[in-house]
Image 1 (cartoon, rainbow, N blue to C red):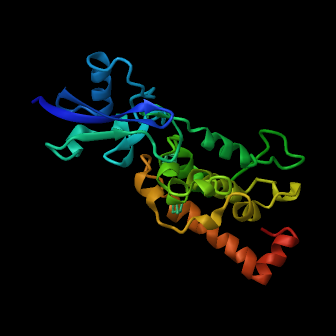
Image 2: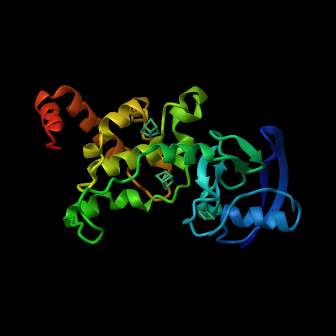
Image 3: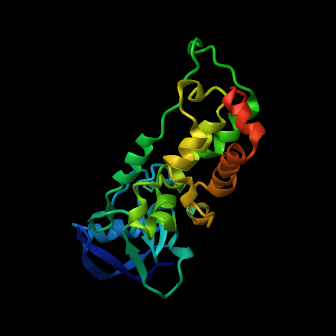
Length: 253
Ligand code: SF4
Ligand code: F3S
Ligand code: FES
């Protein structure tokens, strides 16, 4: 059964703008992105929105629905409060480009700051061998679609512009955690201690385990419990346990 809904959409450029209200017909089973497309096709042909797959896999359609970071294509209208306006705003933590589109290049800059996997010296591709449990452990992290909803919601970024230079955010600390656990990663032999880097370069200490990142992740990755807290524990072990510190120094990880 169809019904009419009010949409209040932030329209503007470069951070300057305001809300415009629209009334639009909603069909059963539709998601928020369907309604944005209907508005583009009828009342607001110049409404800017970023999207691609409409299947929750490309991570492009990130925005805020009623103040909560969401994928527009995975937010069913039936899950929103009936009879209330649907408020759409761009991701708050990143600079506005136009309407619902933000400039997420902060995240690409942070991605580049994480040193990539370092192949062990003397092993040719195809000679790498890993235990099944080492393959399975980071599998959860590799489901990330880089929607940056976790980056948008983390208060250390969202409410503190001044932290951005020093804090990589949950998505990229998760990447550091994944590489730190990789049994073939030879970064340490090449002079990069990933645990020191987590603390000194990627701002692990800014995370105070609020778990908001985990709550908004559309892939249901347990970012805090499975990546950030264990990484914090490994960093603390390294720092305070003299045997662990000595083992690290002589190459026993
Ligand atoms: Fe999106 Fe989850 Fe990846 Fe963060 S960890 S970027 S919320 S998929
Ligand atoms: Fe931020 Fe997630 Fe830590 S929301 S404070 S990175 S647990
Ligand atoms: Fe690809 Fe929404 S359009 S995740």
